[in-house]
Image 1: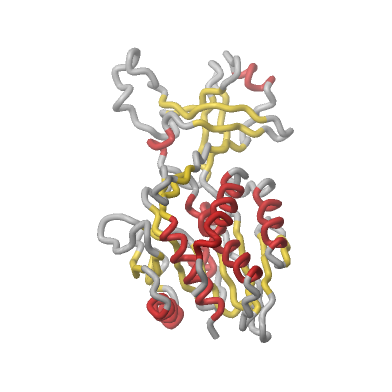
Image 2: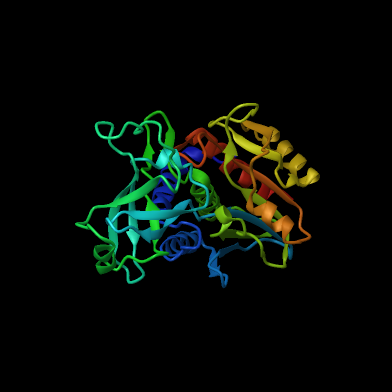
Length: 346
């Protein structure tokens, strides 16, 4: 098995580049050029679908084409309404855990390209003023965005060019620790996109021969439920790469690659899942097999859309999903090496 340590810096740089390109569901304008540059540098071809997803192709031996997918879209928000006092109401894009957003920095993007910084806050933000500062619900009705601009009315907001439906980007706050942890928002699922791009880079750098053509599908609507609703017709099997869950009744942790046997959609392909378990064992990888009752993936969407394609799901273990997430480089290593083992197998 390839020595992953040689590629750790590549992985970190790739992940950081992805994190620095905001991409809440449906907004792919900034992240796709980053993915295109990295894919083409790894000797792959890059194309985009009509709805903004990417297809990255690695040429292989015979006429069969196998697929991998991960999603570049993240959680976020949109402007819902400008209040008369200049506060901004928001609506969620995807499912961020709203209590974790209280006090988080953000940026509003107008449709003409202007950007304004701000902060998500409770409507009872000061403990010296409000009796319910610690107890008030943290939800869309009880939170707002405080802009870092002199705004005292809805008219002031309008003068800035901010309108209903403008995207709000959440600061990911990505950090790599000396102990090997990665802590950031949106590890789900930019860590997986970086895993696929790193695998492609390793294949290209080491001249590995693929037995089949590989198409990596990077979707941009997974967090809102229709990311991989369409996939190329020539794909004969799909390996989903998304976060592995960490928590109660689960075997996975941040140091392992998770192999998901079943989620809220139902079981993943039995033979394909068995194959992944065998490859993990044969290559001495640290892995866990788990069931995720509150989970759906791009492969789930592919199934529900009627595609007659077997699918399986793997991913690095991620703690505190949809909040301030964390994983470890050991989990990343195990995930990348399992991707490689699968792609290089007959």
